[in-house]
Image: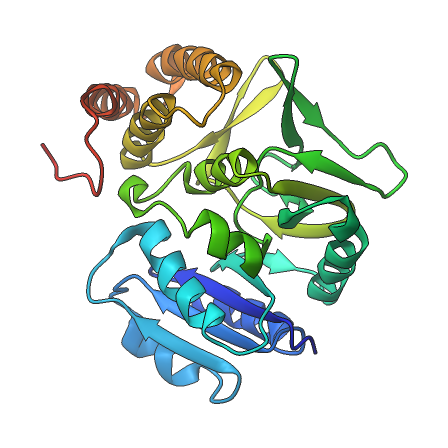
Amino acid sequence: MSHRTAAVIVTYEPEFELLSRLIQILTPQVRTIFVVDNASSNIDAWQPMLPAANCSLIKLPSNQGIAAALNRGLDSAQAEAGVEFCAIFDQDSAPSARMIDELEAYQDRLAPRGPIAQIGPYFFEHNRGVFLPFIEFKFGFPRRKRDPGNGTWTTADYLISSGALLSVAALKTVGNMDETLFIDYVDIEWGLRAQAAGFQSYGVFDVRMEHRIGESALQIAGVRLAIHKPLRRYYYYRNALLLCRRRYISVAWKISETVRLAIKFFIFCALSERRAADFQMMTKGIRDGLRGRTGKFDGS
């Protein structure tokens, strides 16, 4: 067990079997686990089954979004004396049995290179059946970095939040997650903000984790795109445009993301099974992003 790392798990209407499996895998690996629940309606069914030791439940009075929930857990983790790292997870993630030790070892190995923001595993996404590449912009273009086959590490501009091992030192300098985004782009924004502050993110190819993004996948010309509920389309488009308004984010990222969003807009309008709802929520997201509206979607 590592006494250097605390884990934060954010839950919302979880399937207890998946949550229980995650807690069982993490319990021998970390100092303590903070489960932060975003006002789940089924909490009375699974709260009594949480382990009594090494696991604390933080109940939020309403659904305050992924960023706010992460921040409540991160604050609690940082209050633990001696905690150097915070490992953050979604409720249905499936890390390996030694993932925390392996990521900590990379933290120690890479520390001489300079301040570290976070280190994360190579991510297998079940709905698309692929390992997701680490992203880094070079010479104005995004590089998608995949396992070269030698089990090494690579630099990245940001990481998928679930499974990332965040440095407490970076959190104290960079700050916590941006709660105004509510959900989506929260991990990207923090990684880019940390990068602007001089902290480097790293991805590790020989540390693996499994997860699902979205509900299913849509295949277009050999490319599989994650399918989300229409409400997530709203946050996706709004928050991307909100980030495009921020000075610490590179022009290259803004151009690349705007082009990518435009392509996806036409794909989902033409091919999504919920194209009318997707169109409505994407256009509302674009409108509110241009207006600078933040926080939880109010239905208008």
